[in-house]
Every structure is written in C-alpha cells, then in structure tokens.
Image (cartoon, rainbow, N blue to C red; front, side, top):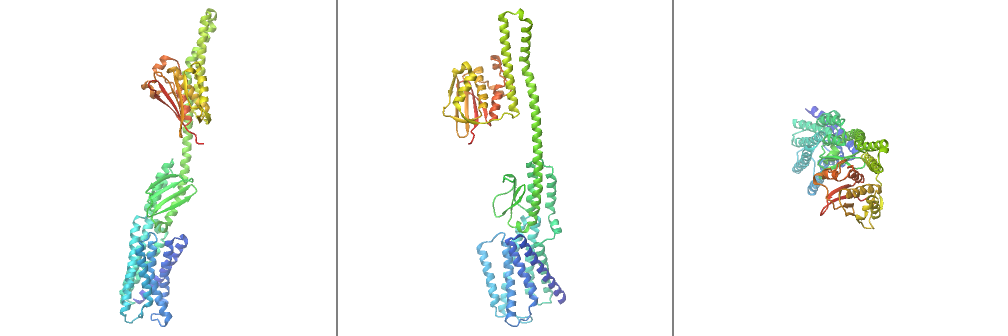
Length: 567
C-alpha cells in the first residue's frame, strides 16, 4: 500500500507541476486577469506539492518549523486564489469578497500563531484539531463557491468553453473531497490516503484538461457547432447577396462562441447585418477585426478566457465571410449590369415602336400632301393650294414637336439627362418661360412669385416642366392661369393652376402615362400625350415629383416639388 500511495503522490507532483506550467503559459499568451489568478493559484499549489516532500516529517529548529507553517499558509491561500479566479468574470458582492478575504487572512495569521504543529505519530492537541476543522471549512466554502459559479455559468456557453468550465468545477470539488478524506484519514498508508491521492490525481487531470484541452478533445467537444458551421460554409458559397451571406453565417458564428448577439460591420463601420440579442448586460463585447470589416460579439464574461480558440475559429470564418461578401458584390454588380442592358434594350425597342407608331400618321399625311401639291399643282387654285400648304406646315410642326418629345423621353428613360442645379432667381426665369410658351396668352398668366426668391434648380429642367404645364393649361384648361412658388427648409414648390374643367377622376391614374389622353382632350384638340410624361420624368430626374390635384373652385392644379439643395 505504501508503494502505491508513494507512486500516486509522485504522479501528482508531476501533474500539478504541469498544471502550473500550463496556467502560466495561458496567462503569458492572453494576458487576461483571470489567467493571472489561475497562474498564481496553480503555481502556488505546484510549489507546495513539489517542496512539501523535501521537508522533514518531524521539524527541528526555527527555520524548518517556519517552512512547514509557510506551506500550510500556502494551502490556506490556494482556495482563495482559485476563488479570485472564478469571480474575475462576474464579481461577487463587495461584502462577500471582504468576508472571504478577511477569513483567509485570519486563517493565515492563525497558521503562524499555532502553539505547535504535531509531528508524525504525535497526539493531536485540541487547538490544532480546531484549526484543522476551521481550515477544512474555509477550504470547502471557497471551493463550493468556485464549483457552483463555474458549473452554472457554463450552461449558457458553447460546447468547448462549457466543458472546460465544468472540468474546473469538477476539479475544485474533487480536490476539496481529497482534502477532507486526507484530514479524516488515520495515516499515510491507509486506504483513505490512497483514495485522497487518487482524487488529487483526478483533480489535477481535470484542471490540466480544463486549462489546455488536447486538440482532438476540442474537436470532439466542438462537433455540434462544427456540423452547423460546415453547413453554413456550404450555404455561404451559394449566397448571392449581402443579406443571404449575413443570414447564413451570423447564427453559426455566434453559436460557436456561445454569443447571444452578433453584428457584422463593413470597413466604414456600417452594420451589414445582426443576429440575436445585442442589448448591453453583464456580458462582454468582443470585436474581431478583419480586412473586410469587423464582427462584434456579445458574449459572456467567460468567453475570452475559456473560448479563446473558438474566437480564433470565428476570425477564420470572418475571412471566409469576406470572400462570400466579395462574391455577392460581384454577383450583384453583374445582375445590375445585366438589368441595365436589358432595360437599355427595352428602351430602344419601345422607342422604335412608339416612334414608328406615332410618326406614321404625320409622316403619311405630309407625304400625301406633298404628292398632291406636286402632282396637281396646276389643277388647284390659290386658295386650295394655300390650305394644303397650311396643313402641311401644321403636320410638319407636329412631327417636329413629336420627334423632340420622343428624343426627350428616350434620354430621360436612359438616364442620359444630366441635372445641374444652379442658383436661380425664380421670378425672372418664370416670366421668360411664360413669354416663350404662352405667346399671345401670356397676358392671361398671373405670376405670384417673390422677386427675392432664389432656388437651386436646373434651368433646362424647369423650362421643360413649366412650358409643358403652361401649354397644357391653355390647351385643356381655361384662363386665368396662376403660377406661384415658395420654398421652405426642405422643398421648393412651384404650382400652375387654371380654371378649366380639370381632369376627369377616372383618368387621373393614367394622367402621366405616355401617349394617353382623356376622351375630352382628344375631342377638344390635338396632342401627343407626351407632355406630362416628359414633365414628370424631368421632375423625377431632379429627385422631385410632379403632382396633380383638382383646383378650387374648379380647374387643374399641378405642383412641382423639388428637394432643396444643401449648400
């Protein structure tokens, strides 16, 4: 039995030394406060385990006695250091910290104040028995707190951090049980001593695996998250938009570190997507930066220490996400280019179709008139010839107007019209447009515009819009025609209002459609049905709109609304 116990103790000596080395290595690698407390805890324990066998069982002299008391004081301090490690992530109440720290200090002082420490085979005085009882209670209370904190906190973590935290909790419980059995055992060579030593071995192994689990074990623990992650990566390669990339990668990315919230930012800091609960709480925000942007993880306080390798996996996944985002961007650009080509082709086809349809009538009329005049000039009197030439001029003017309108419309649809707002004195410009487009009817136009009003407007766009509205007001409405303009902090508004019959309610939805004219308009006068379509297209190219509403008490009211240019 003695040989077995001694062999196990040698194994424990080696194991606790390795645990201390692993703890110090972990602290030097990550420089976390928790890592420092772990390094102090296990470094102290390894020192006690390594130095203890070198001291005599029956100390003689002051220095040997002091060395043994110092080792016992180290055992008193160890569970408090372990407690400090556990509460680094989520600090306890100040009262509890002061209480346990004070008790630990009392126990250390008590260790050095003991009248005597009995040697091997000596009877145990009452004072020392009371000390051993207090020592055991102190150790037990601290390790119970450590066990409870780590075990319960691990439930919300990802697989690897959860297993590591549970191993720490189990190791703390095992070493406490080993201490209790050793304190209650009858001697060094008893079964109780062997059981205590084996529990210490188990505790050391659990601490070691919790600190530095082997890669194969990590892979096995991480299998549930890995399976989902592999599926997410496979889906990622098929994502064709930023939204799809975000939707497919963020949930497994959060799951692999047990984060309850995650955000993906581009290089400019804009949020590309988010998942989960990102409300601030008792957790910690971990930012992982990459060339393509940043990922912010709302994790628990335990993740940076226990999930450092998982964060490294996330960093790799962020790089894959960047590739997927680039692929989605290229795909979107290709789609946009294809849509633009299709739209351009459609515009070309529609333009040719509309031009052929609308130009056929005036072109045919002009051709017929020219043939008639040329073939029958000698048979026609001066009056008939003058009438034919008048109709010819009208049809030629109609064709010229139609061609100009078709060209305007095609340029607007192809986004080939460049809008260049400039500071414009509104009233003089309106007066000039009215004089050019209203002709003899200009005296029937009332201009109610503040001479001091200046707006940033494209002059050509305003000319095309306002001239169309004025022509329509006299063609389909009735005078007087009123033009008003005003500007606030956000919009410039110009209104053209007449006193005609207005637009029939059933025709209002089609009012701005190309080549559409109401029945009353067709019966009253000629036209192409393009004027309002062109006017609204110019307004929209100017990032504004053209709106119709019935005038009061009667008539039509068209309002041009343009955003105010910030200067």
